[in-house]
Length: 131
Image (cartoon, rainbow, N blue to C red; front, side, top):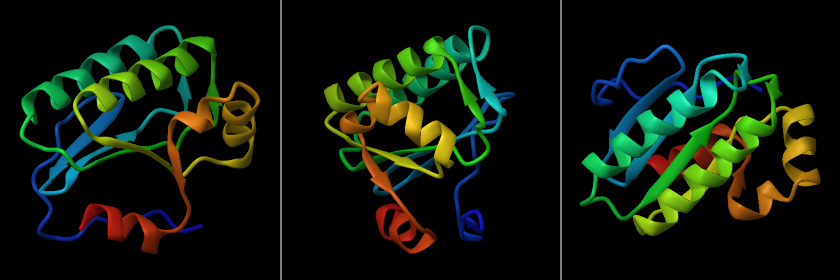
């Protein structure tokens, strides 16, 4: 599957070593840009996403967690997914997962984390969520 290309009128993303967060009028888009989410990456990613959610309190739309480039998630990464989902829900946003490869999606399903998110497949569906 070809990765989603953001429109040219997209606002400037938050720059980070592990996650790129972009604000849209209909919500937040957070793309994890590291190949694995483990003990080191999970708290940093969580902190940056929480900060973005706090700064976007006026948004009540969608939150998309893009895991396109992620090949491995440890238990810390699973905890991150749960924590982020809980923060998103308390901010009255709808949590979505995008770009999970088969291995990552199977792990999320095994641990029932996929039930906390709406799993989005395909660039067309992602485009609709982002407005």
